[in-house]
Image (tube, rainbow, N blue to C red; front, side, top):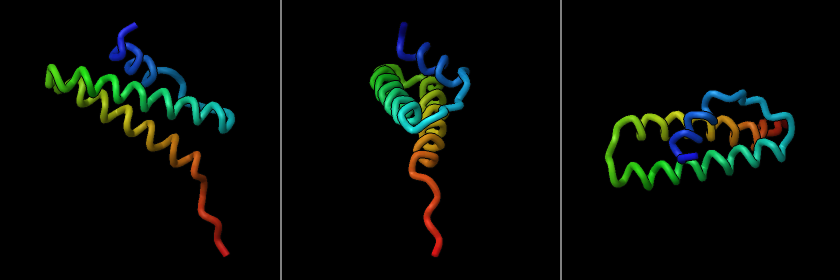
Length: 74
């Protein structure tokens, strides 16, 4: 399956990760998808690819925000 199809599929599937290991795996998967799509984008300069990378980046940021947790208050 192509990287673009995997990226679109990742956006459509449920983004509920039960535990930390699932979040880490998802974060790594999204990162590899973004980098793969970026290589294709460098050659074609297609705006759809840029939009897909932006959407995946938003998802990645949400996952990483959840991984870091809330700061402790004193």
